[in-house]
Amino acid sequence: MRLLLVSLILSLLATAATAQNNSCPALQDRAIASVSSACAEQEINSICFGHPTVSLAWLPDVPTAAFRQPGHQTASNSVDWFSVSSEDKTWGTARILFSAYAPDSLEAQTAALLAFGDVALFPPPPASLPAPLLDITVTATQGANLRAEPNTGAQVIRTIAQRASLKAVRLNEDGAWIQAYVNPEEIGWISRELAAGDIDLLQSAPRANAGLPLWFPWQAFDFRTGLDDAPCAAAPDSGILLQSNRFQPPRQFWLNGLDIRLNGAAFLQAQIDAGMSIYVLDGEASINVSAARVVVKSGFYTQIPLELAEDGSPMYAGVPAPPSAYDYGSMLSLPIAALHYPTRVGLDPYTIIERRPGDGQSPLEGISLDAPCKITAGAFGANIRSHPDPEAPVIAVMAHRESADPMARAIGADDLLWWKLADQVWIRIDATVTGGNCSAVPLIPYEH
Image 1 (tube, rainbow, N blue to C red):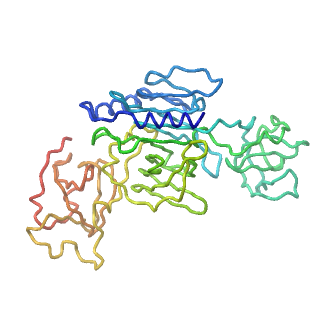
Image 2 (tube, rainbow, N blue to C red; image 1 turned 120 degrees about the vertical axis):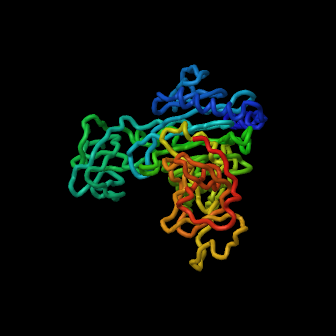
Image 3 (cartoon, rainbow, N blue to C red; image 1 turned 135 degrees about the vertical axis):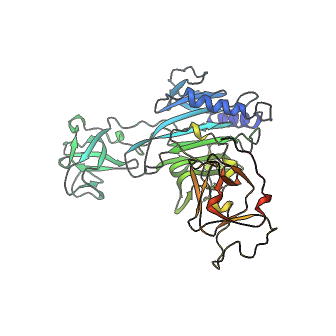
């Protein structure tokens, strides 16, 4: 049945109309504005419908909810699969806010997933989590040993520090030991004397009551997206944006079977023939495959081959490619404003600037007066900003004697001249030294 559903979704994605029309990119702008406004009060662990078109398959025994107007919500663990699509005069969007654990702790943080364009998502079947799950704290000054069995002769899995938090599942038969999770994938036994909490609420329970792993819904899912299907240059391609809090430890996700640990925001696309692409817009992603670990930083992307599993779901089929700098301009149309945490598109500055010469000389050395304009950062470097405005975010820094070829110049918000190096990439002129015929660089208007 799942294979049939997967084939149906693939057919829908393949036949969705993406022809350019006179409303592009206004249609996409309206869809993102809709999800941002209609889902402004979205609850955690819910899916919010932002804009047509969306299709859902509900899990058995789940009452079918209304999901037809922007702002409609349903519990994130209530669907078997869902998709958004891009059809004539529509552009689907939906946002999921969900709790997510870090790989080595039980501290939950909110993560966000935004699907737009042509996207199909398949979460795994819901797991039956242990009940109850009670918070307990290690009280012993020397910490506590987490053991494989409830006795002092059992193997020590690890030592847990004082004041560490655990999720308790059950007591052993005589009530002297507590079985508890120390992180989402590790469970063991600690002495009851070494912990505090509502331990009396625990009971002896069958071993099956404690399963692994202890992950929240939507920390794992399979997905497919359209590729290269933007209806116009100012609109984004189909895909998903995945985000966790950049200033907290990374959250762990399984996407098409791949272990990804993310703090920040990433744009993802996937098709069987083309593989899965992960573009890290902000923060950092660690991708783990067997013994290989690839770290992708802001401004870079990697690709991973995919294959079809026996049930028809996509599955990673190799190690990630070495990270490469992505095209910054192609990421600027992504709807990052609809994410949960403020973020921005990162830039690898060396896609538009040249490193300082190896011999230590100025890059302007020997440049003629009629040569194309070249700029270099002064002794204190130069901030690269997203707009010609001293209040605009700094997206990179040009170091002393690094250089670039400006494409235009404009009077900025501070009434000073700024160099434009690329779309939404600006440097103020007084932070640079120039060479060549810079008066020939076009002077363009800039609307404050």
